[in-house]
Length: 282
Image (cartoon, rainbow, N blue to C red; front, side):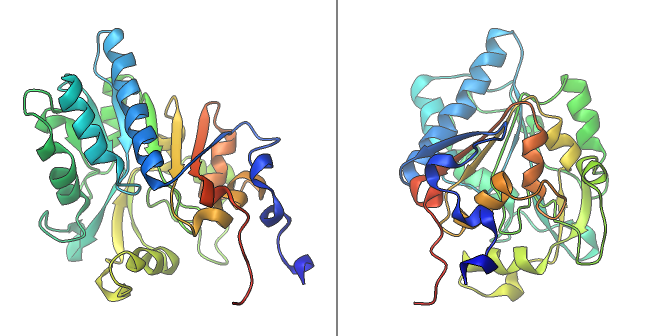
């Protein structure tokens, strides 16, 4: 029966990333992932400040636990982040392809305010104009902003059940998109896949009907154009997908597999994510 399973599912934790340019780091529990991600973000702020400029980061809502941790560190260390530019990866859309209202319970904009920006001393927090989300009316504005800032210092993110980064969904069955074509996709409005809507519903009680069907996302072009890619996985169901990303084929069918074409990519995961997936009925 095991012959029916992809070979990459049998890659041991010790061999994850072996033979690829992606650096793999294995930490402990979910809290250790949040702490490490927060410290790594702050380090990017520090490095830019040493160069007498503000950092430019692409950041996710998912993972999420790092933001209150980072806010606490900023306040405790009195670190001035006013010049940092934070570009969020994506946002859900309401009908007519407008952002969901900021007070919508699933709004990423609302989450960032509640769990990050509102927790930071106003004298230290990134300026309001430096808190950016892709605009569904003008998604190309993200690349223009990146160009004005001289590039992205680091892109942080997670990986979806189908291997997506941000909301860059893989092609639908029967839709052929080459790796190079997919890598060049810019920020845009798109339909969310059934897989994404299903797994995202798990975090809100399993009701898929509450998950919007459209979103705006930063593109693969902007993600892969970042000087550093720092991705984190903290969900037990990611045990299989990290193996597909690292040891399956590099293909648009698994967007995060394109991290293996990036010159400075790191994938950090909890030890239970690194563990071999337990694929059996029980």
